[in-house]
Image 1 (spheres, rainbow, N blue to C red):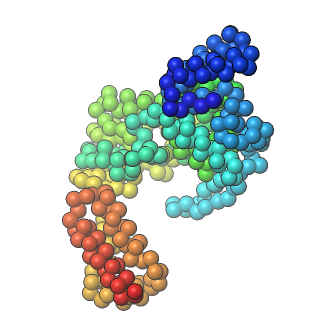
Image 2: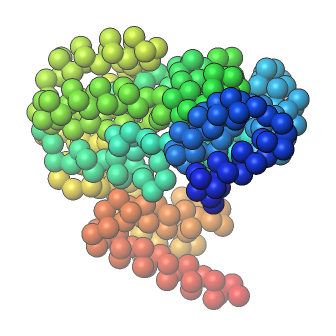
Image 3: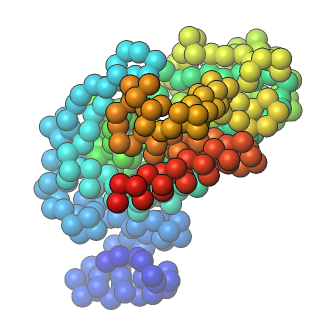
Length: 351
């Protein structure tokens, strides 16, 4: 029985009718309804046990038990190269487990409230929303959490589901379905949202610290930013033990203190006076457009040893991103219009 598109009274009446037909006792019915009502009021799917979860997901209870108890068998592990060097391990769930994780993501996790200070993995928000909070500030402190997803333990994930109203048994099954070796796997569709939900109380503590001092705080995934007239030593002495006590480690190599007289960048966006892509990106765009206008697209591509058919699309995408960051950038708007018309001309010539 599902609780979509009905009121609590309708659900309650239907549940009592079905339970009475199955000869369930009044105390049993009362316990079930007391458990179900707060979950219903949160807009979440009511899950009584693994057999109920089986009916909701369309997967057998036996298979769900296997996925939750023997998770290692249901992941494919590989490594990718980081932009900064080194390798990142990816644990990708097989399709059946990924299907159930997506169900958990859409039906449960996306319906839970997220910290207003979290700007990543939230529908409708982007790096721009994160950066704009720190525009034109005296100082900016950016810190990075090392191995963010694997630092989130299954016990914390369990309490996300437990605090949503689910029983210990159901919360354990759900957390096991989302964790690998007692941690959040890098590669599961549920990991980003769960990391936000687990970190919500820490977001609140850091935000309270910041607000008391007239500072601004946001978090974009594993990147924490605090800005304003801040005392760097005091702030770092506050952050390190707070995060360490919760199992998170800051990466000192990625800690940055940016003063007003420096280029201040937050999640890759310059925020000194107005939002802007970094100068090196703007210079590269100007240079490419200049040479395309002077020598033509084909000649420019030959000169830079570019053979990809999608070169013009990639360049348009970069310019489009610059406009996304600063919608009032008339220079980039001019480049965008020029490149779009150039692409249309190329299509006509090759038609």
